[in-house]
Amino acid sequence: MTSIAIMQPTYLPWLGYFSLIDAVDIFVLLDTVQFDRRSWQQRNRLKGPCASFWITIPVKKASLEDSGLSAIEIVDGGSFAVKHARSIELNYSRAQFYDGWFESQILSLPKNYLTGYTVPLIKNIAAKLGVKTPIHLASDIQAMGDKEELLRNICVKLECDNYIAVPGAKAYMLESRVFSDADISVSYFEFQHPTYLQCHGDFISHMSILDAVYNCGWERTAQLMKRGVLNP
Image 1 (cartoon, helix red, strand yellow):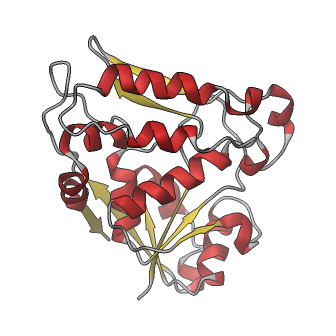
Image 2 (image 1 turned 135 degrees about the vertical axis):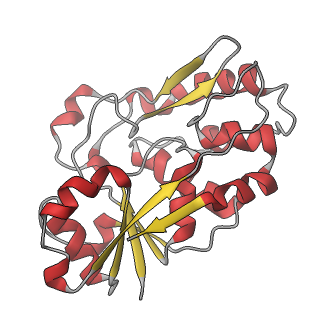
């Protein structure tokens, strides 16, 4: 069987996101969905001295009327990147494995569109973690349909017969027959979040992947990533 997972591209995703990419044969970034303001699509959490905090990519209001995520434009052509890089440096420069890699990545992507940041960052981070799974864009596949029908049609286009969903999708997946009618099995991916030594006190889970990398290093982060479990 050929397994596939399909997720929206998000900004500097958490460890479990990359664990899912690593667990499947093919991964698709769903860049054709509607933009959801103040979602993971444009922001993520970092850990500061007192608590976690958000870093958010600002987008133009005028572009929010466009139907596809890939059409969302960034405010001021990416000037936010300098602020984000500085914020990362201020909060992680004392981490054991800090090397400025994420800041250099963000600053090297002066793009006009949101996915011009999120997609390359996901691909580059996955490569650094040693993930070999091919990563495709839904916009390149040109599959049609709404919701689970779109997901099913992407599976068909890429000749995948095992769709890997996250636990939060289980309720509506069980109500739908679009996958079973196409002879596509559905499994569920669960990630057991590890604990590790963080800067600034007690451990807080589900931070951006950069928190694990700067506190643990790339090699150990790649090992921590192997905690995903597939369930029928």
